[in-house]
Length: 191
Ligand code: GLN
Image (tube, rainbow, N blue to C red):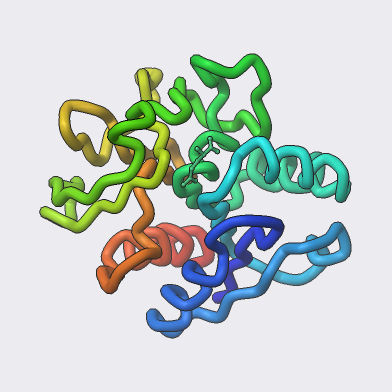
């Protein structure tokens, strides 16, 4: 199994380390030719969704990646990655890959509480550490989307088919459980 990490901007190296700790090899997606390499899943990291969205278009990665997601490639978007996957962004007119039936709210916690740590329940896993950095949350989901975690009254993780999103950063810290969950999702599609 090989998992690609979108490596244009943001916290991509941390995801590669998590995958490696789980014994999964990671490749970096940096340019269009990287799409020809074999990979079974994709992680879109946190960072700035506007910057990543712009680079996806400028580097001509956008259409190829969107097509792969639409044909069922498992994807895990964290924070900015969640925003890139949302079909609707409540406080931004521009959407990006827009493959998941969720409404995201960018910078949802305001300036004062922009970044914080908490521990909340994640479906099937239990209570896990959650680090939020100028995070979005999910304002609403369609019926076909399963809510996996809520924290402080807001939806912070969800899944729709092969698409997984968290508004927090499971790649920061030691807890491998959400990455393990995604690796299991990927494994299920290649068996
Ligand atoms: N605020 C960022 C955005 O809107 C997301 C922050 C993050 O990924 N940590 O893209």
